Image (cartoon, rainbow, N blue to C red; front, side, top):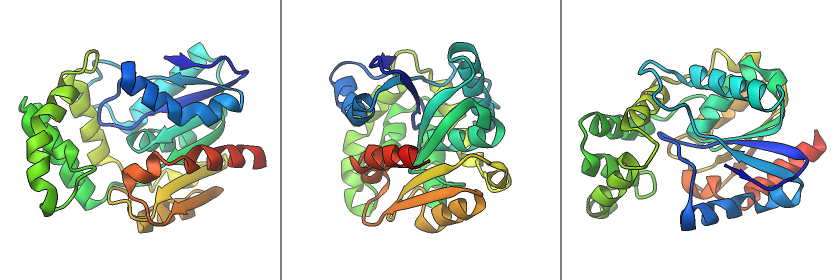
Length: 256
């Protein structure tokens, strides 16, 4: 999917596990996050992960898929890569292995490794996907935005609805959701981050339970040229969807 006809190109690598092209009302709400980029002259490209990926496909393998896409469809270079959450894991690998494929890169609410809590949630979600249990999968996914024991009843109430939407999304096989979940659990970019040569913008939430502040700061230290901005009071979802993100990304692009 593409929005806008600007002369500059923006490739959005979305979070996960699982990736879809948004449509309808959800697509319209999603598109509003990109208004600032459209006004700045970008054409926005929303590209999902490969379908029917090998079960052993890693985040680094997915980065290779995106590098191949950029080479084949964009003449070898995208002006701006915007990579979020799980997509930011892929973005770290892309920056280390294919720095020639983009002009600028911004990594949003991501870091070198998931927290133990984040791994536990993703593991439970992946196990439910593997078992074909949409209710358990949805309950785990709902914990992303409703963590803690006090909201457990609400997660269980919403679990079946959320799970059916995730496991039943057209064009997004449950096997691919499981593959992405496994890739996220195994991800640790510490060894490759020092290989990144282009300037990187890293935007993180100060209260992100998936990618804690300490890990975000470690990630920034390991990247030779990294600008780190922390949204102090915000968690994973709030930071990732903030209107501050496009403002800070565009300021970074102008400054570099």
